[in-house]
Length: 406
Image (cartoon, rainbow, N blue to C red):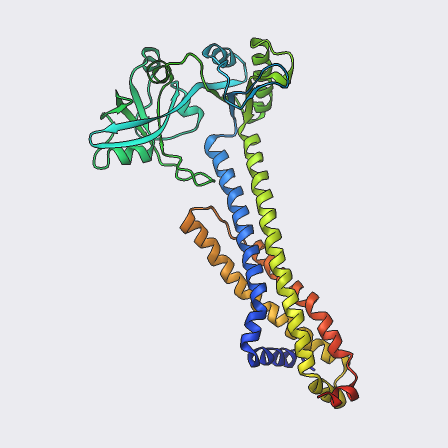
């Protein structure tokens, strides 16, 4: 029998039992859609992380206040709970030959007010190199100067979200706003960066001189972090090691387990995030695989029912000269056709779900040709694997017994 005739009979059998065919394909549809959506989420997350690395710069290193440990196995504090990272440490770090630009960093939150508008946002403090170290771009105005740092002037640069909220109908540059009831003059506005890979608003913050934040807003003598840009990407690891050794020496730390600071590169943090995304993606792919497995079992079940219903038809075909392989090919074609159509519908649904996640929830997704091919291969494999046994059962029927079947 020609392949075209085999496929024609297969699709005719599907049309004869439309509801049963749709219900049988449902598991395959859901499974394939899930595979495409999960791969799109994973690819989108990796692309977002790569974009963030490029936007921050591959030479960036973060030196943060770490945890503390009292009495070896006693009370412990989490990351960022120490107050031992000082401006003197930052200055010492800046003397390392492979350190290019650097900036101390302070962080807090505050209610900010401009006219009849107010907003609660993140406040960050840095020196005149902070903007360059973080690879941020100014859309309007200018950066603050070394004199602003030295004099602890009350000047600030606004993120795009804060600028639009506080000054919806005017140019923010040169305007006066209040942070914790202290008047600040706006000297610049950052270019929009949009959402981060986890959906956070990267434009909802204000940057001011670290001396102003430290003395006039927070009233502290330590710093929360030191941001460093190494002289080149090849020098990042050497710089991180040198910073670690320097701080252990300055803080008189003998045992690395007692470090009261942490040194992280952008690459390290990106790898951690990629691993988290891959782990979650693997879990979701497992769920999608279960859906495909259930869909395959449904196909096998329906094909066995179809063999039972069409026993006399099979006997008649065998009696008039159909070969065993013709029967095997026909029923295998029907199983693969169910899986194929379910796979096609699942691809459409998977693409739609991926687009919906991006537009509705803002989650980054990337649909690739490889993800569609993988999903299609899964669907075809399910049809062949779960359709072979019913097809083999039909092909092995005895023609005499099949003709007697009622």
